[in-house]
Length: 175
Picture 1 (cartoon, rainbow, N blue to C red):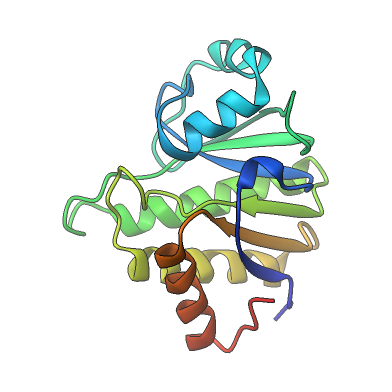
Picture 2: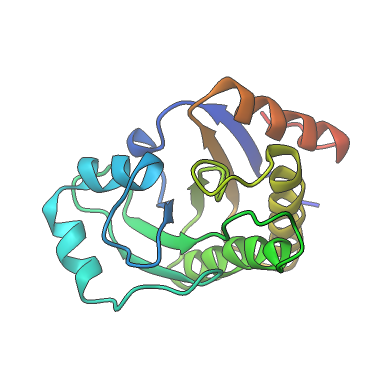
């Protein structure tokens, strides 16, 4: 297994990586949380490009320029709203990670930063989301040359701790 997995506390909008992933809503036109922060930091050109994308289905991903952000790209993915775990949420969440990484690979992104997709307003339980995310990402990294590094950038201590626990359970040093 590759060792290119990292977990950090901080602000994803200041990450100097090839791509940051936006936990977007279906419209891709901005919202609260990470989505709003990314749109504010990127500036109005991001919104203008997103308007031309026609939205995004849950579990899918689309890519845009990053404009005022230090990254080259923003990969927008729409995570599932937690409904108790019996509505296909785990498969949709894993799909968010796989589809985002496939776009990163297509665009030759060596380093990608993710937030905790679906864990804010969408209510996904942190420990379950971390397990799904790490499984999807490690499987992808094991079978693809790019990206080389995936970093989760967590704004709050509770989310960071959940990802650290999940890494420890898998024998991954989260750097």
